[in-house]
Length: 266
Image 1 (tube, rainbow, N blue to C red):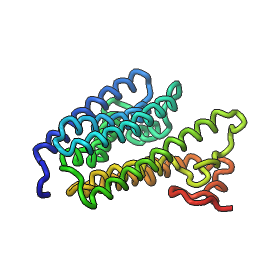
Image 2: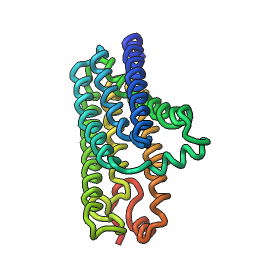
Image 3: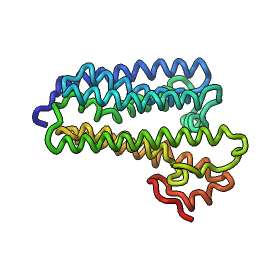
């Protein structure tokens, strides 16, 4: 850990926790007012953008990498924030949160805060550790530059998959003739979850940027945890469970890769 600015990192991570706490508190109040807590999904990307910005302002690491990270996270996070807002606007509560709160024993304010908003805030902080650490590290040099370039390229792949996948699904659902039909064209013919795959690539790419300077690589658990949630916990697996009963979905599962994009089976 030679050369790591512990005091500066402490300031960055404390400020990140503070801004996330304020954001989650505000999101909770909005959720109570409108009567649904899936508004927390809207604040996911926004919170990570705020952490990237806070880290860039407070961090005393390499300025080029600090502000490059802000740009990359903002492009990803603000698009996702708008997409989640448009997706949930005017609709009811997400069944996932109804089931979660039912299992937890009700929707009292403390249960809601503990099960949804506190959990999400801590997850945002942990996932954003590569951004925080990167902001206090020195310039990238040597082979680290190759790692950084690979990180940006992987980020590009991720953003394209996530944005294009979301756009294709939205356009598909907007066509009345597709009602009840399983989406299996475009990127959705290569993977059943192009948006989740893209999200995972984005965070592995950002981790590579942090890993381009030692000890940024030690934050590897952040993209690991992010990918775990996208694939096995709250992302693809839950969606698969709810979609399994729909006509045509088992056949779609047989011919289309679960997560990694692969050519569709005939």
